[in-house]
Image (cartoon, rainbow, N blue to C red; front, side, top):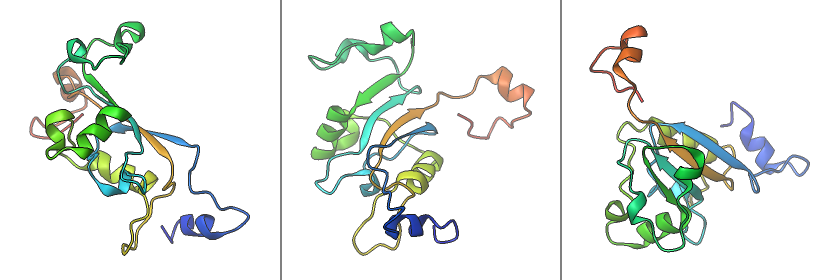
Length: 159
């Protein structure tokens, strides 16, 4: 971050901007929502929602009071997890039983860390906007005809 002068914007009185009030969207391979880089100081998540297109539709199991946003938007696939569900998962002994969205590739988590990784005590790292909030879209796997058209090998992980 020093090479990009991001750290200078964090410490300059005239430019001090930690990302508060900013929402960053990441459309990639998902996110490791359990990573402490994406949490507030009180341990709650800074992730507003995760739309995991690779998971089956789970509209019938939404918690009471959570609107079914997919019918209004027209999306017919995937599962969305909102902040309250992510926080509940983070408080549990096994978060993935409540919010099973993962980033097996790691690329989405890596990009989210650069853009929005928080400040951890004792660590020499911070993202560009460590106080921002995040909206994550984990893309479903690419269709075979697209892989063929772009000459992507069948053993390459492409979302």
